[in-house]
Image 1 (cartoon, rainbow, N blue to C red):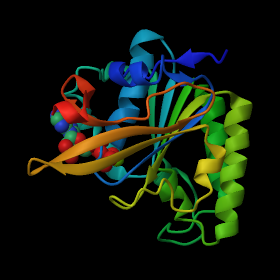
Image 2 (image 1 turned 90 degrees about the horizontal axis):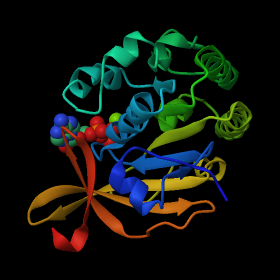
Image 3 (image 1 turned 180 degrees about the vertical axis):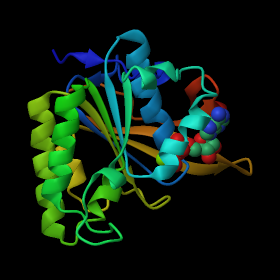
Length: 237
Ligand SMILES: Nc1ncnc2c1ncn2[C@@H]1O[C@H](COP(=O)(O)OP(=O)(O)O)[C@@H](O)[C@H]1O
Ligand SMILES: [Mg+2]
């Protein structure tokens, strides 16, 4: 029996038959505005609130750190956790030395060392990288991407933390990654998308794969409100 951990998104835990397998790596793929950052933040905050666990959010996007301002309006978020280092938010771009002055190229060994140091320092039970696509786009060679992803997979396995890696993909393309390697280091895939329904743009969620688990294969509507993410049956709304 695989041990499950709750995502603390109640509806998602239901369709995953309890949650995601502990110490697994989940790829959360979707285009801009589909709710990726909100879902991952609720995943970390749920653990801060219910499990007294340390959590780490590695951001490649300055905007996402500014989002903390927005997260204050969510009932699942508590700014105190940041002050107490239970929810650690780190801007990877400013922390990693880059080869060139505009910091557009990363060396994979620097990124891996950086992630290793953060895991050693904070010992988080849950990790989010938002996004893995933004890291990989900064390597100047596809071989570096492949090597980095396999090394990252091994590092996370070794450190034993449950991770969500965010993958930014084109809208509606039904691709889960940019380099085609991300899927292979991940144990599960959750896909977020937009659909147009009754002249409205609606967010959707579908569990594509979850290793060793029984899960729903249905596409759900995903609604975001101050209380967090809710999933609704597509045909009912
Ligand atoms: N407090 C909120 N109430 C309702 N909807 C929200 C709220 N905050 C964000 N959203 C919705 O979430 C979207 C952005 O979600 P986000 O998690 O940043 O997506 P992504 O990371 O995939 O780009 C917004 O465009 C908006 O539709
Ligand atoms: Mg985002």
